[in-house]
Image (cartoon, rainbow, N blue to C red; front, side, top):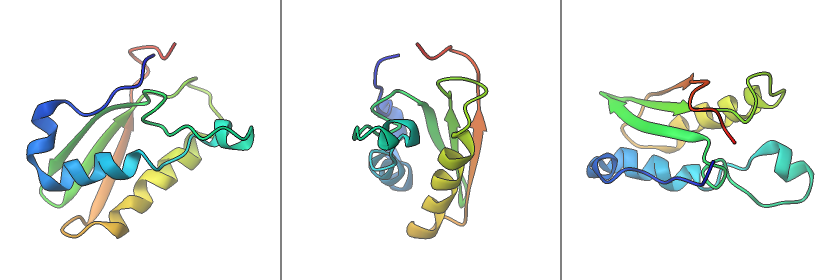
Length: 101
């Protein structure tokens, strides 16, 4: 999968735009262990970011549905809520499609 960024319509909300900026700093744990500096955005793991009130909704596709590091990525994403004004929660959902390649 090629690296993807936000769709233009997702950037109209300042909180969503801020999340996209922060996502660029969330490392992929597998690559970090091997000494490579690749974010989850670089790998194209983020499908969408949206907002519902004070909750940010992030949809991801993992490189492998049984990825042992998926919990680490989810925890890193949930920790973003503490850094954003006006955001009380982050909900992360995983979608196995499209398949990551």
